[in-house]
Image (tube, rainbow, N blue to C red):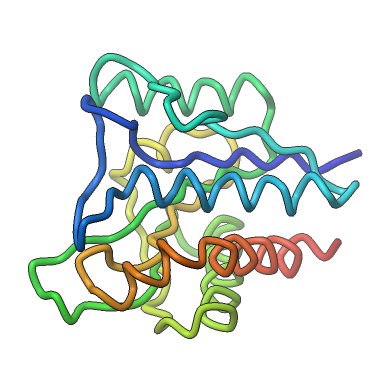
Length: 187
């Protein structure tokens, strides 16, 4: 039985629920590309089934921030995903802020452990600092999913180095998340 991974590429191509911007880049474009690369890696492995929240670059989900988040969660729950991974880029008013971090609903938990493995491998594949796992019980996609869910902040779009790496090498971020999933699932 294949492990079902739901990849939520955070945000929409346009408002409502468009993402952060920095260094001439848009979060929704970066996370779309990383999600597609991650899906390709997972599909090449017979141990996984995968579904993307945004199968095309112009897929628009919902008519408000609330419906955008709700529809992503409902799709994953209906599909019966085993794991939900929401991909984002971080932003800060401090342009030197750098690195990857992730969030889970609670700790200890399956999601928290999965996130730790993903962050370990993101650091190995990208060289970006591992800023660690945190609990964020208020995030809708972590609170309302019926499976372990991790929200991954790949790097800071407001940091020129992080932004360039995310834009130019989405494959490294996809590989890091993939390796983390492999480590956690043991397949």
